Image (cartoon, rainbow, N blue to C red; front, side, top):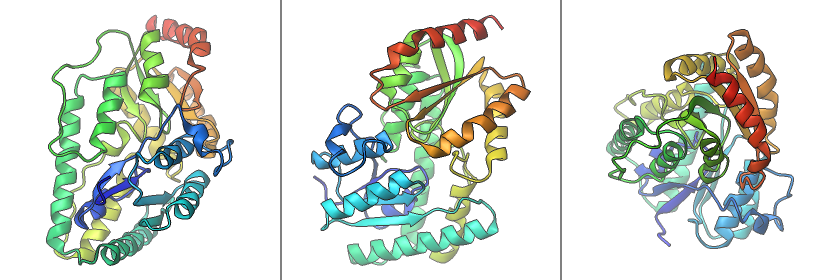
Length: 332
């Protein structure tokens, strides 16, 4: 295992700081079909993505160095278990403000500074402005590569491409095909889904996911704000603003901006309906759905809610509901 690889799990992780400190940031997606291996250390009524990531690490297939974002209770518990199980590895918990305003940016800038100092101390180096400029430039190039490569792709191909991109590969290697054609165009929104699980099932049922508003889908690539500043402190402030300006997830406080951006993306993508699919035990998305439902219904946007356990062995039981929804919106 490469000792310079660094696991990360949340789309708000500042991968540029990891790369500037000489690490290769690798987004982990865990073992969807083997998450029970983590049940000795984490409660089974906890986020299945979190348990799947711990199961992957327990099997020795994930870098032990890791940066966690304090975005939910499940991620905090993963950080706690990780530190106990892998005590010799670098482990850091980054606080994330819920508000995107000036105070939120200041808090996130200070958290980025705290993370950078910890990385420098562990790696025995000092990150200079040129190191951070290089990492930010590479991250921006990777984002643009994804946008170009994702054009015309849908469903499984689109989400898998997003996951490969978040493994921080340079240069990004993509296939030339434009993905599966046909199907009823839908916008998929939620937290994080297994592309070979529920996403593949939707494709087989006749849906064409033209936009994947997931944290392992299109959402991390939605904001381009060039990082400015001639020194590290100013660049950290600019980077904090960049992360808080991207399309927010349900955990963030700016729900109205999230709903507005979803409605705009729905119209721009040519989708016929919205499928809201979230992981079990996710409080943020349980709270988010009723508000989003009211907003989308008010604008006449058809909506279907589904739930995933990440492995999605139950997906076939949803077939009637999905097919009825697709039939309804295909005739609109």
